[in-house]
Image (cartoon, one colour):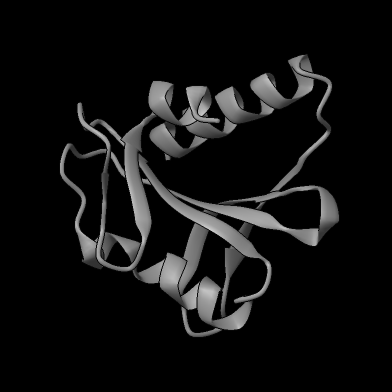
Length: 107
């Protein structure tokens, strides 16, 4: 939970210091699928972020992101796993994998 809290704090800090009042929340289904952070954006779109304390997440780590996308297909702009990797890469399901600095610096 420490890593998720740290990532959450950095995202909120960045959005509030930039004048963006994005709403950030947790998502979970009755069946147990979950996503650590859903960042609501203008126009009803959202970013989905899963936080993993590992260096090389794989598609199993993106299961919650895929579950959210299945329910909210038209609203999920992009999916991310924020972890301790050194290099940015993309999983087969179009989930971006990157470290926190890379996530905060992305355009």
